[in-house]
Image 1: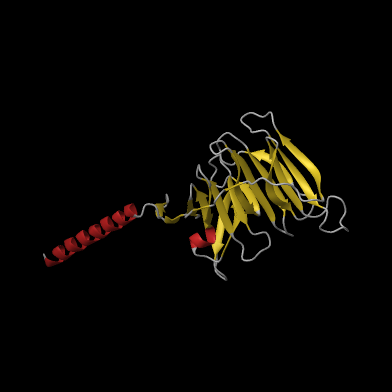
Image 2: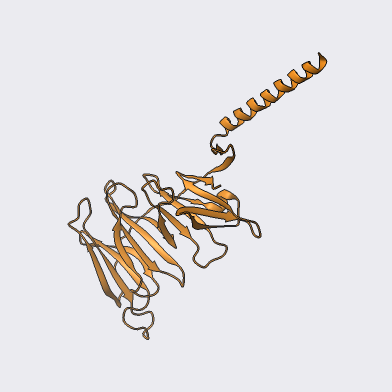
Length: 259
């Protein structure tokens, strides 16, 4: 009789422990998800920090700068007519060949010029100016990329704000990569190291007002992070020195452990 009583008490305690574990899983539903094989994946909610946008200011090229290229955007649906002018600083080094040197950009709209700042440190080669809808509002922004260092490329995203009637620099970011990390039909903007150590990954997303950024190394508490692919899926690998990295998938503002 005593043995049966001890057995019943043991069963009750085990059931209570299981119930507590289930309650903890429910309470921490944002931190753990269950696999089909009854194993669990860690989930990290990324903390995104707003990236301030800045209004473009009017300005003129300096004396001696030479206009080398103009890209006209007009007569396109839902677009604001504008022209991007690229100038080379011919005063910088008289020994440079035509088209070499630091390139500066200006945006022309309604007979006014607005400063875009430095576009490239390596002349016109490698500069790309195009339209792409990075905010997914049906209106394409002006995207400008240019080389700023031996392995460093910078992207500027320029848009017209109809509410304030201002041209704005929505984002300036370095070493851009563009990929649909979670296959939701919308590309993410990813900054990653292209030569600097330790490697890093920052993810940018649009929040309907401005871009915001999440730093993967900070979120994971690791030293490094980099993008890779496994079975045609984008994977983020992040770890510490001399330790096997952990693998994550990005999905809707979260990192989900990849197993």
